[in-house]
Length: 339
Image 1 (cartoon, rainbow, N blue to C red):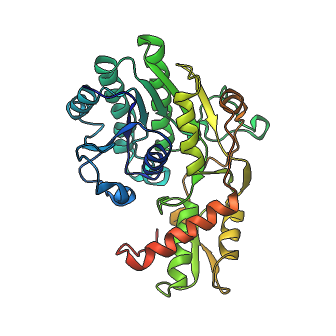
Image 2: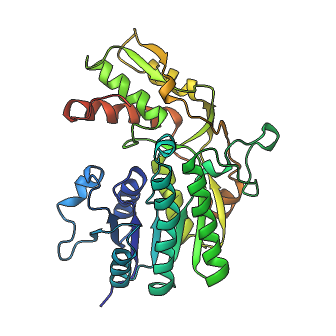
């Protein structure tokens, strides 16, 4: 017999997917199924691996790939999930300039593969389609804070791919009645954030410098971009509410934090809590995007009024936890090169 309350998380090994797994294990009695590509690192979910896939345990890990619809079909047909959190993606904007075709294929065709399988095999599931604030791109100052109705002007291949993901989610609701709900999450960070993102790269470099592994020089890109920062642990709490608190199929929401600042202020705070007092900052041209979405400030009133969600974790706590994450990771990581 298939148990009730089954959730499927695509991209369970990523930063957001792993934190969502943590949250659901602690705060629900659901049976949770995670999708991972066979070559993905399992480091972010290592604390769950000892019990994964064992009889009587709540977490099941599956190998599948968004670009292989057969593997998706096998999992979804067998699991029959009630809730699907589609988080898997090529999620690095800077990387997408170097690998645009892979980014477009994974995020657009991969999402289409997933939604088509859901349509055939689990049509009653509530489906969270994770888009991105990057779809809005370069927004004029008079259009800030950004509302859900703002037009798309994506500024990277990643953003273009997420615009496709966003549109597919809404199309499958309108055309086929699939119970999709789409989110545009603005900048969210915290422990397990990949080092290809600015604030995590800063934290990693500071941790490396504190250990004496690199010189006390922090390489940076564009520090003038404005961002509204949220904690990933607040983000996954929002995603749970999205599908469980009076969910509205076809809806789409901006979600984001309370703290808006320049990237330079993020760097300044991380430097202020470092154990070093001789850190220097150096602009690295390789870290500059050809185009940058530089006014990422959301209007999140629709989601907050519908769910009652509010961020709980402060900007300072988020960045402190991010730096501590890298401090703990650096001595044991073989990946010490700076990105």
